[in-house]
Length: 140
Image 1: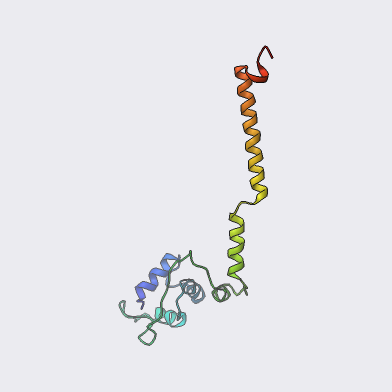
Image 2 (image 1 turned 180 degrees about the horizontal axis):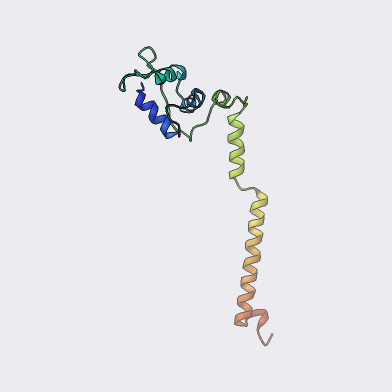
């Protein structure tokens, strides 16, 4: 459960003051994955709330906020609530595309092999010319 001080810290971390508009506070609380944003905003606006009193109340013990978890994926429902954009994401296709990008294709492998062979040949002929051996021997 969250106190008024805890919610104010969440707002401060995200660059808002407790006197910001309700829409800005709601968007921050939704991003922090708070479940009951309306009651939190109402309790935050009430100046008579005790600093140590729970904002969400006893009736909703499962209300939790996950603050700034950028390594987790946003669900399409959360994106729709925050931005008002309908998003259809198939995470298995997204993972498959990411795996294809991280693997080396046969064309890339062939180019790497050809470039290394050309560099080796240039180095070999350069050393042969410098030391005058092989094709570059004076008596050849």
